[in-house]
Image (cartoon, rainbow, N blue to C red; front, side, top):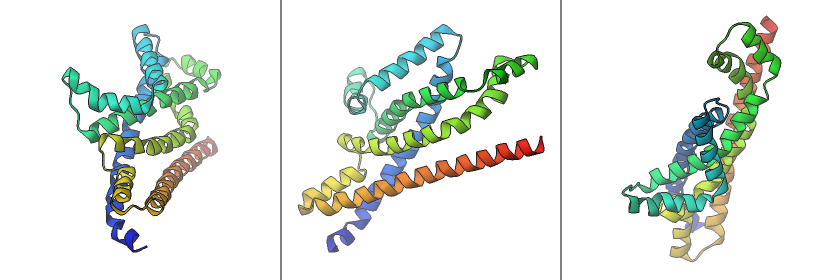
Length: 221
């Protein structure tokens, strides 16, 4: 317990780095999910093909290998990235590919009658997407997006292999320094669980607020 108190600040710094990786990766993943998900639904064939290629590549290869390529292989092509940048890019692009399928499925799940109503109102495809399809699809996206955010947070441990001083990296350093294995990894296990619980709580709150807003609109109508 004395060792835990001594290294508490050390683990706290690793926690902050894990949070930075998670937030940065989630922000990029969200952007890529919408770009690729909507791109896959696009009637423009080059955009659709590009979206499919991105989704299949990042879903079909290992996140660990992607991160090693991003940090260790790209310098051979003249592109050198800082460890944190490489970590966020890899996590965001990897999880964004899974999020793209969530976006595509949610948009396709909007009832056809809703699209037909937009056509009857003379809405353009972009207007139908903005005013009819996305407002109904986003609430359906939130639960799987929450799960993907938790997956991204757990995947952030892989970043320790490219020398990012996150929770897992610091637990390894403590283990090497003290010879202790049980308590440092038990501590980060609890911290990862707390972060995951916080992510799911935020998503649950967003779901409730969106549901309340939709119920309010129905009540007014």
